[in-house]
Figure 1 (cartoon, rainbow, N blue to C red):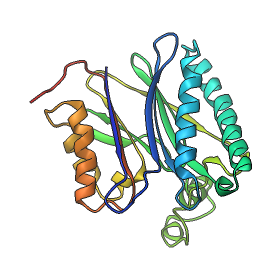
Figure 2: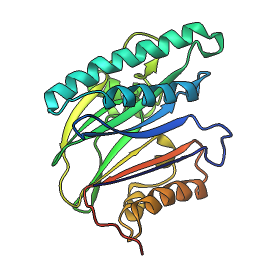
Figure 3: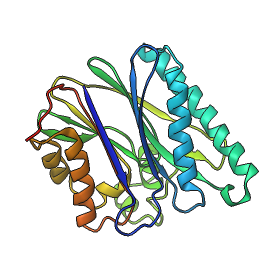
Figure 4: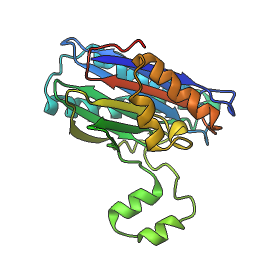
Length: 248
């Protein structure tokens, strides 16, 4: 398995509110994460860093090695991390509304667990098909999933992209957890929404499949998004099931 990740403020932002990391627990189970500070509030950079670092360091202390145990741990830790962010926001007036999205993956031999709050995204490249495997928690999608709005109405919904789940602001922590196959030749892509605002799935897939190192592919995803005028911070985290390293 290979892991590569990079983050950048982007060409239109001076501050980078994204944060990214990879952590290994006591039984060598790997967790990777991307967080994106909510830009409508102050302290998004603080919230995203706190989310990844607290989740990651807590993970390093565990011996969780089953899907059920890890799912339970994720739910409990999301509540804990949310409480930590809330406590910090209450101590500092300029951070009193800070919040962040979070998408994470725990890697098994042939499976992955995906957890997310908000609209940072997880994609799986399998047999030449790139598919988003996380759910974007925004007002439009939540109403569609609940069946309370039609697709046509959803397209015209004011503030439809408003994030509905995150860490911070209040004590309503509802991390969504799912499980997916992760097979030989598959590749996982975690990202904030900066890249997907400007690069199509076809372009993302083309870069992910290039015969260059995984590290260079992550860098190229960011560079390509910036070349297309990415309006937000840009982050790319790639996990390849293969150990073979392309260096061409």
